[in-house]
Image (tube, rainbow, N blue to C red; front, top):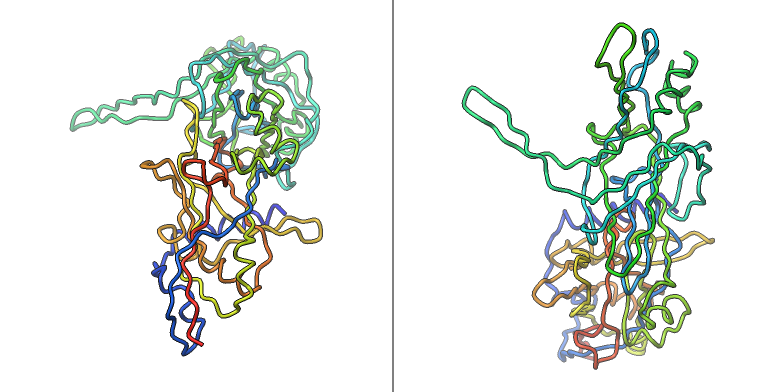
Length: 446
């Protein structure tokens, strides 16, 4: 399942890059041979759309790691935590006589944020006591790996600050200034250094031996309390500026340090937890939690981090199978006036896939329309009307021809690492910008 989903995402991105820009009004004309279309029809066709919970998403060795706690009126509470290995920087370190830690710091480079950055967060760092492996597959609903609840490695309260760091270098030509991403610095308890200094030499002779002895760390946020509070913070843990450092001295030398690395060779897992019972949106609860699809006419929902997905079916196109020669010139899914709360911006891009379950395995497939490129296919947020559209003309023709029985599924882009939430208008035409499908088709001359 993990490989299939990643391949689908790869081909989705490839299709956006290698666009060929076919004109929408020519779609289907090559399907009718020498017949000449003579009647054009511009109409709306029935779509069936509904939102449901997503089981989980792939969350190991992702590009960034999300940590934090956030609560919104619609989606309730979302918590994101992370497991990671640490690796030794040099094998067989020599600590010298009577080494003593002066301080220990965990540095994590910020990537992005989502939510209210004015809210305090508290991160607790634990020592993991259960093996986890880079070659294994892990998902966001992972049961907690075992860890020592006491003593903790750290408990740190802070207000996130993603202000870039100004770096100034003096050069022969003057001063060269640049910026680096901000870093969260978490002080680690000194008992970690005592543990490291007392390890036998075999445990520090290789990374394999060290990870067997010290299996990793778990970074977990405390829950925030209150709607509109909290944020989900993305960290670039594989940056060379993300690491754990022991600053120490011994009987003969001051100002020593030893670095533990977090890099691409480390197993890293994201864990995402959602408490939807804290939602104050009854339409959301009834539709998404209790399966009342009738309420999809009012609102629809999307959420990253293994949250909420939206399925689309096309009974209106299926009804067109009565005329097997019908040509779909253009078919577009359209919705505008999406709602979002302050500090919780909608995703800049949505993905649309064919969705099948084959032998209990989910299979996502890219649409042919997507291979025409993003300008043709769509999916991007239009800031003018707070809306999205997808051109799915080839897919619509397949459905009319009886060549496709798949549902389509709608996701926010990068849903494994981006926590965006989105409330969409439902299918009721009384909703401003309602979710609809517009079709232009022709019937060939008989």
